[in-house]
Amino acid sequence: MSLPLIYTHVMGSHGFPGWFWTALDKVKAGEYGATDEREMFDDATQLAIRDQERAGIDVICDGEMRRFFFVQTFYARMEGLEHLEPLRKTGLYAYDSVPRYRATTRVTVPKGLGTVDEFRYLKTQTDKPVKATVPGPITLSIHIQTRPGDGVYNNDRLALCWDMVPAVNAELKALAAAGADWIQVDEPSAAIVPGQLDEYVKMFNACVEGVSAKIGYHVCFGNLLSRPRGKRSYRWLFPKLLECRCHQFVFEYANREMAEIEMWREVGVDRDVACGVVDVKSFYMETPEDVAERLRRCLEFIPADRLSAIPDCGFFPVPRWVAAEKLKRLVAGATRVRAELTGKR
Ligand SMILES: [Zn+2]
Image 1 (cartoon, rainbow, N blue to C red):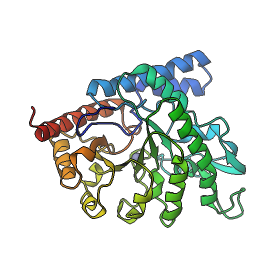
Image 2: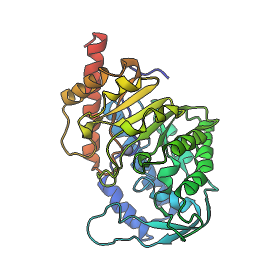
Image 3: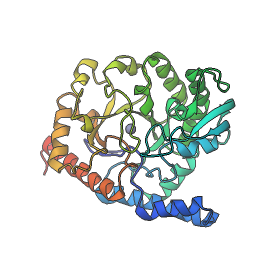
């Protein structure tokens, strides 16, 4: 795949169009048939793809229109779970409002997570290079309760995460077999539960074992309705994270005003680094020059042929118009810096 210098891509999810939220209510109320539903998801996916293409994004994702709140749809595909009531149902929706589950048997995902069908549809809708996205085992486990004396995992979250690994590995292999040559594993939670880093790295490497595709690894600090959850630092993850068998790290920088970007000088850049240079948690519309400035800062520490430009995280928590506008500015900023590097304007 031939991509320009400082190419642009997206994290995965796109802002839902207004009509799509209304349609989701209709589905929930049982007012849509199977064909209505398929058309609705296909149409929303096409809009997400068109928004990226219109903005001039170089590598396209399907917008994750078939997923809800990033991971919530995956639980319906798992076996061995019992649904629990959310801990808090009133007031603002946040990390303590999400649906929860308890494992009644060891959790399996016999029919896969469904990302292969998403990818196949994406391929029919664009001629541009594409990227598939799959949540990692830690992220997939976060809504499942592991408390002392509660469920088969008792208090052992790592055992639960390890049970997700075969499913993620099978998913990645199935994606590669379906033609995905670039897959991003999303693990916002790796930075959220400190203390188990060695195990996380082992788990990541087990997930990508035997997968023939370019592997991106997105680690962020949480983005539920634009709120972070973890301590917003990558520093403690290094140098251990370098043992992850990925070809690209995908990190958020814009909402932290580029904090820790200088870390790459100490760590050493031994693979591609995609830097978040558009803040998905703010309505502030970056100007192309804002984006260009952030990219120039990245270039002080990351060689141009290793660097790519991306929004900090997924666009699910922002309205579609904000997502579409920010994508245009991402491309305009990257184009500006590319021109400076190549001397072409
Ligand atoms: Zn993220």
